[in-house]
Amino acid sequence: MKRKISITTLLIVIGCCLLFVSSVLAQPGAYHFGFKKSVDGRLPSIDEEGFKDIIMKHGALFLGDTNKKDLFLTFDNGYENGYTTKILDVLKNKKVPATFFVTGHYVKDQPELMKRIVAEGHIVGNHSWSHPDMSQLSEGQIKLELEKVKEQVAILTGQKEMNYLRAPRGIFNERVLAASKQFGYTNVFWSVAYKDWDVNAQRGTEFAYREVIKQLHPGAIILLHSVSKDNTEALGSIIDEARRQGYEFKSLDELMISSELLILRANKEHAE
Image (cartoon, rainbow, N blue to C red; front, top):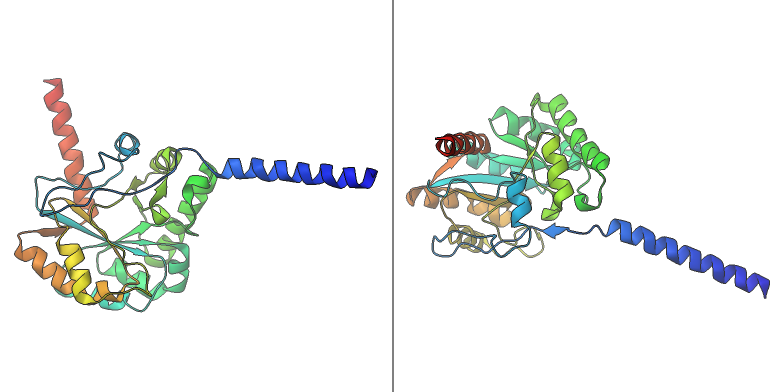
């Protein structure tokens, strides 16, 4: 009987410990980035999302200057699926800058592509070392995830600075935004996207083309996944049609410069 009580007590203790661990991991205030899509050129919105205030508070980017027909092309590179070479070929041919958000796996697995991305003038952004849910990490763990990517990219490509972060799967909370900002990063979300990451559910070049083009709007930050066959095959046509509509492709660095100028101008006007 005593043995049974002991085992029962032990199970209760273990259960309590598991509940405690679970409660620690299930961090409050975590969000999965989402937005109201652009339709017929109207601007997308995060007004209905619960995270708008902390996005603004920590200077995270969702879109650019909506008074200019600028587009900012970004790719998430979690792993290589055989398409990045063609993507780079199209970007080089069309003279379009892009930002590639890479994981530790990608950096280790694709050194030559990493070198080419930087050599051809594109920006490498941070997508974390191990692609975790960053809302469940401590500040110290977040720092380690980001530092490892930055250091290895610098060693491999010579890109010394790394200023942009895209949280894996778009999951974040205020601690992620605050900590990464403290470490020198601007969090970059997006205002144009579609379900392109599932390599087993590709729906063809025309589908990818339509999904991107119908969402275009001034200041759009476009998210594409480099693992998508559809994206790769549609990219040239997407660029051509966007330009036909009067859009111009710019880099995130150009967006940051224009954003800083707007802030300085607004502060000056407020002071006067």
